Length: 296
Image (cartoon, rainbow, N blue to C red; front, side, top):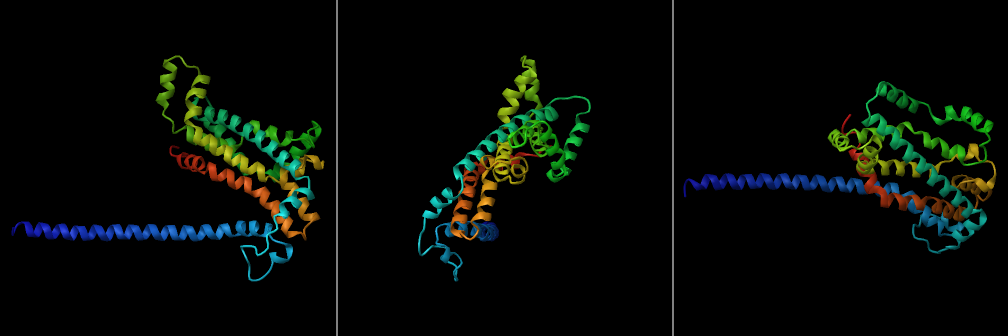
């Protein structure tokens, strides 16, 4: 019994240390979640205020103190907003532009990234550095030469200048997918070649299925970018029947700027589809970003 007492005392002391350790970890976790919740609520306030204002009469929007829950609901703002501008035509144009631009971005960047990551050829690294260097050229620098080029080939006032360049790759997307594909085991390629698979077969049956997180991440980035793109459609589209929602929302602001309830309703209808889309796609987005770049 005398021998066991020191051991029991040490056991109780160790248990107390473990309790303090787990308590500290729990407090740290609670503090982290509290900070994230506070930041989340802060960033959500403008969106909540927009939704709230879209359901209010104009006289109630700027009243003090601010009411997030309207005392008088006016859902007619959404109907009036769609009637004030050709909303459904703009919605179709934005959807058309987004779908085909995303298809081009996914197809082209997947092919190019595979060539940089999985195929050995002379000058590969040098050319990749040149591709990455093009990220330093913003669209504003390339805008005038591209406009002159598309004007000479007769593509102005069409969606071709907005969609076709996506089928020739994007430096950021190429970098993102190349870094992901380099994490895939090379033994899979060697085994497929031993079994007689061609380079196309390796790409389609091995690289593409295993790179789905990166492909979905590129698709999410491109969908969000094209849906909110304002400068591109403003430069290349001339006729109102070709306008996207981003331009339509701006035109609505210039024509009906005093109708804040209708403006908030139009902005909500423009924003909510992307919020819903990102809510369902966030798992793939986080997975693709987390796994990208694990191997240089």
